[in-house]
Each structure stands twice: as structure tokens, then as C-alpha cells.
Image 1: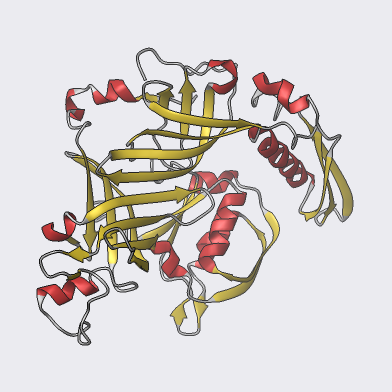
Image 2 (image 1 turned 90 degrees about the vertical axis):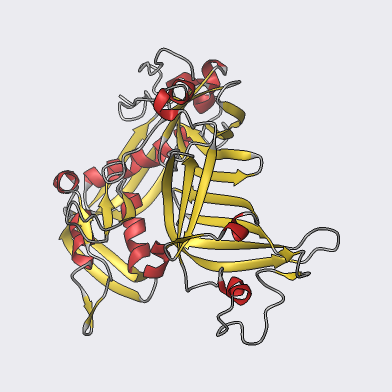
Length: 410
């Protein structure tokens, strides 16, 4: 049973007395921004998604009124890369590639590290009727692992075993993957054995990300922990095991600032059939899943009218798979994705640094059809002079016969 934290009750606890004083920290190569630069920050965004590497964007004022010159880009001298004076160093502050950046968001006494990344893009603007600005984009350090593409194949291996094996492979005299890879032993024990898995001209990190998504895992960087004696490493395993997740309850008119749901019925199907060639049994197989089958029937059951009002007869998928079990799992996954797409929504809430893609929110005070449990698929954390807010994208994945509502206010 999923537990949801009520935001207002959390804010009113003594230990959270600074909840109404949002703050951020941007550390570049281990050092805080200089005070003069900190005052130039106009907006900081952190964006994460279930399907993309997370990133951040910081927008700063690019005009120095005292010098009547551009502050970070646009007025640099020819020797700006080698000069050591303070003004010239500002021209290199947001230089792409060279810097390791830590983004932290939260409140005065509790800042949470959102990501470690690198500057990858700078975008200055020189408008006619407004102050010049500079927007700098950075990607999670995972992007640094895209160095060389490889082609490899594995037979009769589990997903976690494949991930662990990649860390042992070599490219000539050097390791192919620059970090050790940790996996969950409990998850590996429950994983299916894959008859054949191929990496076809892919970066190792992209292959691992796709493998993780197919099997409900996540891939994150775990920083070194001196207390536990663990090095900096890549984690491949179930969501929430390496990084505990927090799920929130958001009520319209209180902690849910705005909410824009879209109800869609035209893309629904009554059933999904997977036709496949069973490599293991050397025979043709056929598996069909319907909306009223046990694996599906409780998901968004209170929206049945939208699922069945104008569905297609069935959706047939042709694949080459390992066995009947994999064919059924694929059919369940496809139909579940369709049913979960009946209601998709975007919303905005107060700044909650632990609200990330992959967490869940319980939407309340919006009636039977729209209230319920949603899976968050993307978040955009925004910090500016207007405060700290989170915009999220989500889809309704509600099991109505399980009652999550805790007492208290949201």
C-alpha cells in the first residue's frame, strides 16, 4: 500500500519551520556562487523525466551597469582564457565542459541535492528593449558516459547480470565502462532469464537505461560514501531502493495550485494480442490480455466507461520472444499503458524537492473521476523571485478499491 505525505501537516511541524523560506544553492567545482553572481540569478530550473537524462537551466542577468559591459559573455577580451583577474574569471564561470555543478533546492535549513552535472550549452540573448541575459543548460553527469558505441550480445542472462557484466568488459587496455555497477540481489533473484539480449551499436549508458526501463528498474549515479566504504558507482535496480521516494497528497485549492487533466477514449482497445516466435520452444505462441483480466481489471476501474465506450477490437503485436511468459508480460504492459493513458494531466504545486519523476501523487478534492493516484512522469522545479514551485506531468494509475486517504489536511 502506497503511503502519501500531506504537505500542509508536514509544513506545520516544528522541524519544518523554514518551509516558507525557499532557498537554492549552485556549487561550481565545489564552490558556492560569488555573492555578486548570486544576485544575478533570475531563475533556476531542474527538469527530470522517466525517459530522459535530467538537466538544469540557470538564467542570469548578463549586464554590469557599473562597467556598462556584458558580465558573463559578450565583452570578454582576447586573453580571457588565460587572464587571472576577477572580472575576466567571470567570463569563464559558465564555460561548458569544464565545470562540475551541484544543484541543490529546498528550504533554508534543508537543501537537497537534485543532481550533479556539467554545463553543456550557453545561450545569451541581446534583446532590443530588455536587459541582456544568459541561460546556461547542464546535463546530469550520466551524459559523460556517452563516449563510444559498442555491440555486444548475451545469452541466458538476467538483466542485472548483464548490467554487472558490462562493468567487467574492457576496450583494449582500459575498462569499457568507467564506473563500477551495483545491482539489487533481491531484484536479480526475481528477474527472468533472457534467452538473448543484444546491444547493437549503442553507448553503454543508453543500453543500460533502455534495459532498465524494459524491466521496471532505474539507473542513477551513487556518490562515494566513506561511512559505508562504497565508491562512486552506477546503480541498476528497482526504483526507490537506492534512493527512497516520497509520495505526496495534493488537494485542489490548497497544495494543488493548478491542474489540467485530459481525458482520452479514442486510443483504447478491448484487448492486446502478442503473436510471437518462441525461441526456447521453437514454436509460434499467441497471448491475449483483455481489460477484465486479473492483471488489468483493477487499474482505473472507475474509468471503465471511457476505456470501453469506443474501443478498437484488439491490438496485435508481432515479436520474437523467449517464451510464453514473456509474451504475456508484454501484452499486459501494452494494455496497462493504454489504460493508464485515459487521464493524463499537468499540474503545479508548491516547491517539493522530493517530488520527482517516478513518484506518485494522490490528487484530491476534484471528484470521483479526476481524484485518485497518479504516476509522475516528468517534473520541472522552478526557483525565481516568485518563489519555488514544481510543475509536473502525470497519468492516472488508480486502484479504486484501495483507500489511501489519510486523515488531516493536504
